[in-house]
Amino acid sequence: MKQITVLTMFPEYFDSFLNGVLVQRARTKGICQIRVVDIRDYADGSYRHLDDSPCGGGPGMIMKCEPVIAALRANKTEQTRSYIMDPGGQTLSQKLVHDLSKEDDLLLLAGHYEGLDERIYEECDGCLSIGDYILSGGELAAQVIIDSIIRLQEGVLANDSTVEESFETDRLEYPQYTRPVDFEGRKVPDVLLSGNHAMIENWRLAKAYLRTAQMRPDLIAKKPMTKAEEKALRLFLAKNEKN
Image (cartoon, rainbow, N blue to C red):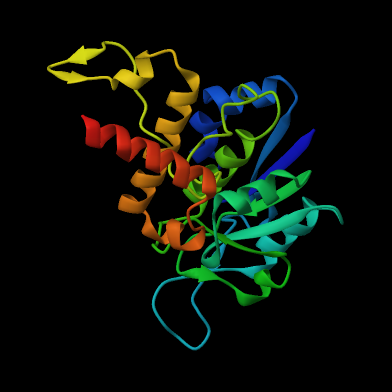
């Protein structure tokens, strides 16, 4: 069973998250255990303060190293991979999610305030970021990472549900439709109703490439057009020229 531990000042932030459909399914099936640990349990004094003003002056408050490091050491082993949620960390990508999903024991530290005492970083294996912006705390980032990892675990989703999703192949996913076939004059493409699986596959491959080129050209630069995509686009464009 995979284990994910979250260290946070606000464990109540995870109450509804842990009862979400996919997370609850993974927990119920014994696929993944998620532990949410209150860092305040490791702070001294009746007020259990976790912050103090920065040495040398400056704005904001800094999370103290003693309680955080005590919480880290009490909740990880030699097999644990520990990461701090930090905007300066490695940016989350689908490839990184796959790498993290292979770890059996993960620990995520959600920080708060202006930052963490630098000595806390020395206790962890690295930092993770979900993008180049600032949140009020690391809890939301930890939830994003946990969700992205859990949905890749066998038994959580249908076996083929994640194969064609955006970013799995450095392409955005092709357009999807469902009933009604005609909504206010906007119709489902005929090819998707044809029953011809080869034509449908070619259409989806072409549309995925075109959508990626329009919305995320950086992905096209990262992975140039494949021979299969070239063939699919040629067939797609030829059909549309006739129409």
